[in-house]
Length: 351
Image 1: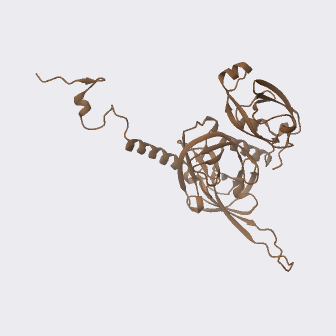
Image 2 (image 1 turned 60 degrees about the horizontal axis):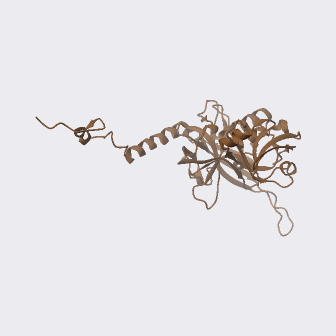
Image 3 (image 1 turned 90 degrees about the horizontal axis):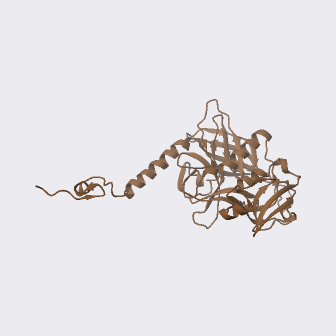
């Protein structure tokens, strides 16, 4: 009688030695790479036709010659990215791409060109809404939910860096709930950090997840840094879009803080009777601002405004809506081993 095969974890050696895929071995690098490629390609196919190239013209101010005579105004150009989020021609982009533009032209993925109107501009989130006219429904993206993001998941950036249309870069979500000061000095809240490479011209393009849903609007890089890029979270963008659609602009209450989302230890939650698992850690306070005048300090953690839980930067921004302008609010903060109630009076954000 022939020798009987020896079994290893329920499989015979003969079976494990057989040619072909071995169920005992993990997927090969080639197989994993192929699966990743299919994921990226599939996500890109869902948004590619909705990503647009934006070119703008801005009027230069009058210049005065050395002889005291006024020179004629000139035009200065600029480019960026954007994407259609409705079939009837509404686009989302960065405020800094179109702010102050006298003419905006949109080029879609198929090469079709349109003149665009500025519907609304919100420098506070670095977002702007445009509209183009089209007799036919246009391809558009699906907006995801940035509140469900997790650090480490796939992030794919699509745009037109340096004028190179329909460029794709990939990476992961590196961090959530960042605050970012723009070149103009404005503070942008609830920012997604990613290592998907961005370059000038990517501004206003979509950051998407593996399902092809938009999770952010690419907005900034840190010059000289390696793979540190930022996008305004799509949940913030949804709120801004609705404000622009209903009011034509975004009104916000302002208290003058910059912060980041901070997890709270279980023992801290239990000790102070908090329902949320995180708060907003205060990193910076503007001198003379309502936060400064009201006694808020750096290293405080904001956990509520008027009994509304503040669990991240986005919820803090949402709590400070137009209804709280020039009205006293109670701000609950954790400071060391204390829970404090501070009274602040927000003012209207003017820039």
